[in-house]
Image (cartoon, rainbow, N blue to C red; front, side, top):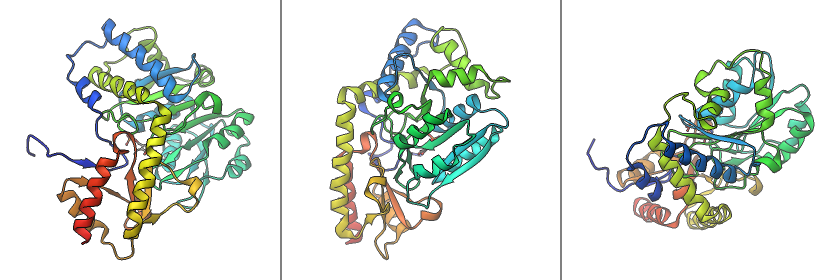
Length: 364
Ligand code: PLP
């Protein structure tokens, strides 16, 4: 591999290009994970995460040293015990991943599904809530570009007394997310998605109700690394649990600050504008929305059905030769759709203008 990678246009639904402020922060001199400056930085990260997730003042936030999947796993590992009834909304790859993880931690998993490319119907959740100790749902299903109706699902779950776990990997920081107002108990994302920080951290938010459930466990969580108590020991009591990746904390701190400086609502508007312009630009080439109902479309991952006869693999290979990465479908949608990322630094006109020029060239 050459030492210097040429300028690359990364249009994938994650990772996203690293924000310039995060890139700069990565070069800061290393400090120890028990250094007072690092604890001060961590406190700022925790406060900014509360804003990003829309939590109460008392809600615990932290970074896990791993990607979004670790955020997912930590929720089930800490909040589920053998035999617990967990209702998982599974209308794509990541919903199914949740179901698999919950089962590995001993849950009796029941599924609420929807046809591919459609959102979960809250009525189906209501019909299966009885007995559930937890409901888990992916807010933005990256595999199909579907936005699930989390506020409506949350309203139902709240009345039932079950905990609500929400995968906010493609939404937090770029789409409305109101943990306290909706009544979410556990939320997680990945640093490399809407925040445009390097991969390797999972920002999480844990409600007091979730901590109460955790405290009532019959046995310690089998996942020592992400034990909620261990997290609290480090993030609140400043005692050693494990060595956190300090330079990734610097970068995430900078990226998160950049997001809040821009303003969460401005970011939501930015996605809408770039997405609308992109759909208008691609429509004459024959690309059409894959998700049928406009209200089910995830703004941060634009899923487009390919034009009749377009050579999916060939065109994406030709784009890659021009240093442009575009992602196709996953599983059943392979060869059928493209999934264009509109998270963080990808949701800007410039990279998509590059794509349009290249497509013009390739498709003649
Ligand atoms: N959940 C969703 C909705 C995702 O899109 C992804 C990754 O694309 C994940 C979870 C897993 O995150 P990671 O690949 O960072 O482990």
